[in-house]
Length: 299
Ligand SMILES: [Zn+2]
Image (cartoon, rainbow, N blue to C red; front, side, top):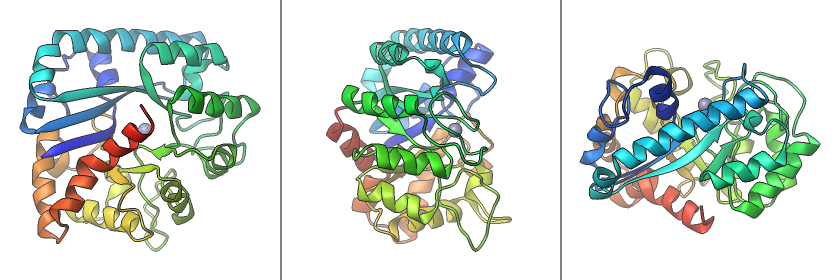
């Protein structure tokens, strides 16, 4: 099978712990990825909310150095197994309020940026804040990202910021690792999408990546694979069969044992097949939807 994953925190974890990308005891290692016919992984560099200004950019630079070093070491292996990495930043605080830093990110090969993490920054308000929204600087950032063909990622934004982004641009954007809220059974996931938000993403041909994080995915006592199935159906229901993808959040959160490693994805695929999804849809979900989006956006 082919697998396209819109979000993981593996690079930051490797950087912090000194573990190698090829072989480790984490959710993602390159050696485990040889099971796929093709594999695209968005590697996010996470900017924690305690980091702002120069410290945030400095952290990004160090993680990016590490990322490119790992790609160099594993280049031949990745080519052999059709493994394609994409660099992203999770937290627009990395810009420190300066547009020139966006060009720096672009030069370093960053293709996507999640505008905030949970708190507010110079760009917008995150999911743990009420009110706020996209700032004047944030609007400039979104417009410039559009020009540079960098993808805007709205995961972690609060509702106000989300709709400010939607008003600010008519280009597609993505929620790389966000599930839908289920108003009937709230599971306390502050940053899950409302149906209205999902519709907005779907209508503008963006992507929604299913997040495997236990707290965002499963109801109390619910089987993990059943929960993924339900989450996919929730996005397909309002017409999202071309928008739904995976955004695992591997190495960034607690994931059920059934799915806490990249080599468990084929078992999930088989399960979803047994639930009645046909191969055509499964290929769109696990690879083609994301592939089409980035081709379309030139990312
Ligand atoms: Zn995240």
